[in-house]
Length: 459
Image (tube, rainbow, N blue to C red):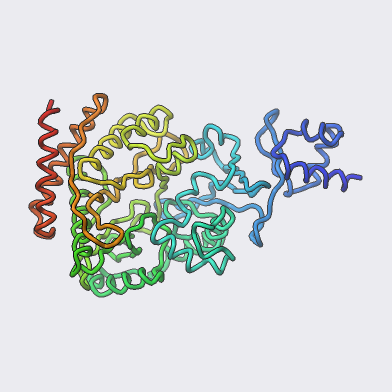
């Protein structure tokens, strides 16, 4: 009889769960003590969620041959791992995260019980995405039995990828013991690191490999062709995301080269104006321009810092999908994700991007430093460049007209600060001998537009 009732209880939880004990008892026609005995006899097939009167029960779910629960680790700046908690798969494609120590930022608001309808939001940025993500999928899909097309991946495919191959994803989180061991081994190994003087030889080879889908690395987002690299330096290892242009003897290649030089200039300008930005350097080799962007989620001793994109936070808590950064900053501050100073910085970055023609300012191109407690710190700026001038998908370089955007009244202070930085940006592009003459002319007109609008709203 108990076996029959347990089968009924598990079927009920798979269909309707998670459920409190009273609902289970009522639907099965059994007493509360009988429910308690049944659920206890189920072992790890049933997951308890919450405490006291808020306790609910859910049916666990096996994923392939990977089991039903896995430890989630954090690798610290010193490269030492700590256990953050345990992730469990539940019926209905849901998941439960049980933190091993207080981590209110991870289980906030509707997710306070640790229950998530799909993979938890704090793992969203570890999903394969962009140029490198497609190459990652192509390499590992067969191993995990997933489709070769990233668009057809489900949460279970992502989870299996993280368990088996997720040792070097963005941020500081690592799921499962196998991925952690691979991450720790990689931190102890010098394999694959380059001496700075070897870049001119190796970067063109790595670019060719990336275009064939062979480049090693994580699923760093973004569609611009790129690869990952590690440079040996006196202070340790510098981890890089390296974007590269098409060969610069074509109009499209020359334009992409100009844009990568602009990204370096934008990072320098932001830094000079008091805004943290990823360190960037430019190298020309093999007929291409390479932009090195130092990973701010990695440390010289192979340690890590946390990271979560605004896209992941928005998808979990707000649901805008697309919103201007300066508008979203208000909401993030109101809801406790950012303090007032970082919310202001995000507003300035949003306006700066608009005033330098960055048409690719989706929420995946800004992020926070993921930590246990809120508010979170704003991550350094990255991917900041005048993307409105990129070549068309056909490869043709199309003429586009830039017009500076006027401020909203309530955003005037942030706009003025951004406009001052944007004027400096366009001026430096005009003066750069690394940028082509046609694009320096574009920069001159754009700078004049910012100056004209800025004069109208000067303090």
